[in-house]
Structure formats: structure tokens, C-alpha cells
Length: 315
Image (cartoon, rainbow, N blue to C red; front, side, top):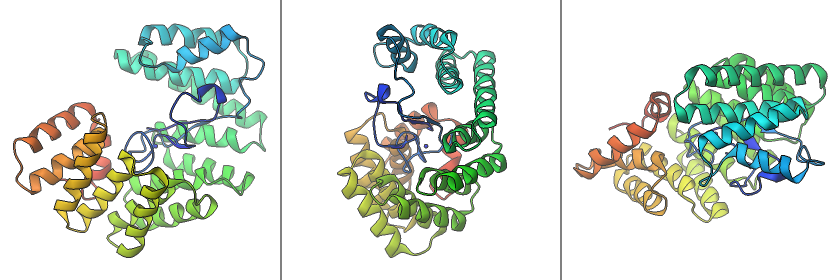
């Protein structure tokens, strides 16, 4: 289950959100093929909401937000969750969610305050749960958010030592390596993640993308992308990954086709729109390429665009 924009929600209460053990990943929402914005935070264990009253569950559901919940309503609901002081992990999750909603409102001061409070609570959790892999994984996600990558890697490594069957820490370290341009290291980490969980499509997407960025082992890269597509029945993010592979191999027409299919299936996939714009520019398909790039540039941060532009995806 992985969402690289960045957070793994393990609570059954969040079952309505896209499930997949994801953490909004390398391009933005569902795994590579998605930008690792926060590089993953896991709000666990899965039973952390057990014992909550129906009203408390409703507060949490509104704190997470959704299409019919305004940012202001979510902020108030997160405040109620925080006020209940159920546990450090729940309060930290609520602070993190509230920061996201403050971002939507452009309240930078409160965004920073909530992220810092979430990090403080996750740190307290590591001090009281020294043998909990989740505690260290959670803190790593916030450290990565603050670009403290070396400290984040140390926490991910510790989480992996505490739970030797967990693929997520390796995936997150691989995402940091990719962000840093160390594609050989990213390949190693993503391969290990796939060894631990071969049924996670996004591990395979990541293996594909890292090899594409490194311009190495094209056969393995292609096989990994095809496996990701098979496991997801060709969702828009794995299509985006294959489009990136085609682009890096110089098959711009095939890249455009995959990016176009992804945008056609999900117009909100700005990463695919960016890819289609880049490929369209190479193919001189104006003005559509300009429209795609304008829309993607407006919706993605400079850091998000740089993630793949630095890895070769640029006009």
C-alpha cells in the first residue's frame, strides 16, 4: 500500500482512501510514476482506531478530508482528534493532516507549526517505542519532509532491522537515492523492496524507473514496468512509469502514447500531463504540449518537476 506524495495510511478507518499499501510515491500519488514528496509515513498499527466512538471516527474521517469536506472543516476535525489525545501516533497523524489542509489555504506559518509538532510527536514515539519499526518509519517520513535525508535514511534502516520482512523502508531509501541522483543506489534499494514484496506493483515501477534514469539494463527495466502494469491492470501511474522508460530509451512516440493514455484515463494525473507535454514538445505537437506543460507547471511544485527533469524528463 503506497501513496510517494507521501504517506502510508494503515488504519482501516482510511479504507475509503486508495488502498495499496502505498505512500504517494515517486511521481505524486501512487508510487513511482510518482514524485516522493514526503517519502512516506506509516500511521500504524492498523488497529490504532480501535475503541473510538462513532463520533471520534467521524472526526478522523473528516480530518483526512475528501471531495465533500472543505479545508476548514477538515482543520476543525483534526483539532478535535488532537484534543482527544488518544496517542502520540494518532495526534501526530492529525497534525500532519492538518498541515496539509493549511497548505491548501496558504497558511505557511500554521503549516510549519503542525509539521514540526508532528515530528516532535514521532520523535517521542521512537523514545518510548524503541523496538517499534513503525515509530522509526514515521519519524523518517517527517525528517524526509524537512529534507533531513541522512537522518531519514538512518531511521528507515533501523525500521528495516526491526522488521526484516518490511519492504517499505527500502522503497523509501531508494526514493531518496533517486531524488539525489544516485540511481545505482536506488536500483539496489528498489530491487530489495521487490524481493520482499513481489506483489507490490510500485516496487516494480520503481525498479523500472531507476534503471531508466541510470540508462542501464533496459531489458530488466522493461520487464519490471510490464509487471507493474500487469499487477495494476495498467493504472495511470504505472503507465506513466512506462512512458518515462520509453522516453529515456529515445522512443518519444511510445512515451507520448503512454502519457496520453494516462492523462485520458485520469486528467488529474499532472505527472502524466507533464510527461505528455515534454514528449509533445520533442515531437513538435504544439499547442497541446504548451497547454500540458502550463497546466503541470501550475499544479506541481518546482521540486516536484525537478525530480524527474533532473533524471532526464525535460523538453
